[in-house]
Length: 356
Figure (spheres, rainbow, N blue to C red):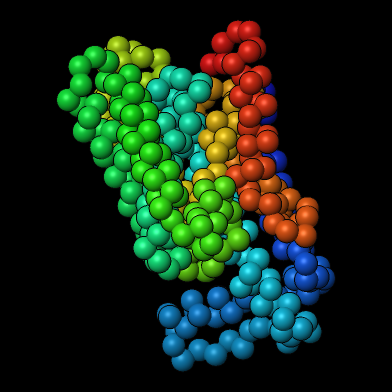
């Protein structure tokens, strides 16, 4: 193992440790105090209870009697497990997915400016959520509608690009821009006809992005499509390395660049749709984090993708902690990511030299 490889593994390990520490610290932050000792007792007790349930599935008659006698207030456990835990998990999941999608898009499109909304996935989700709010749907209906319309935009972009002439990658990007524009117009019209006292504020707040409505059900509904998209990307990450060299090089190695590119785009859009449907419009994460990860570990996607996943989860977790604790009123997380992302984008397009 050379020094460069060892350094990259240390970077990944350090990010994993920082993420674990960030998760524990996030449990302690909030309006209602939960002391560290009580927090550790609550989490350990929950872990032991989970192990008991697993053991009873195999040995139904066994009664291990594990658990910790509560020395904390019941309200502390409610705050830690039912309010903060879903939000912390969702922040890590969304940050991980958006940054992974961004890194994957930048690889397959060989474009350093590629971001998760390149195929209009975020615009479709915005339209779906706005439509559900206009129709008076529940939070679950809003999430489902945002997810379905996000996938619909991807399908439309694919269908249009297949009928257009020219380079497939370029026509796909242009199709995504066109479809995104159409759905943005639809969202604007919904905002125009929405009730200004109730519906319009709800639509506007959703478009700014927030994790304030995180619940256990939200995490459960999002984790399946997220895993369905992330796992194939992890298995294909060495093939992304190959197709960044060009289709001819990939063909000589025996890699079907077109098939790999299609699968990567599909999986990236799936995790983008799943993320945006539960968090609203959170921009810049998919653009900023992959570039910062690339600065740390280079362009090798075997290491870059795990680094982007951990870095993205840590980044959005920290930003969410700031959004819910900085002021008395919670700041929409999309505003904070824009404050960070916009200056970075300006630096990116004005700096000399190649980003890749």
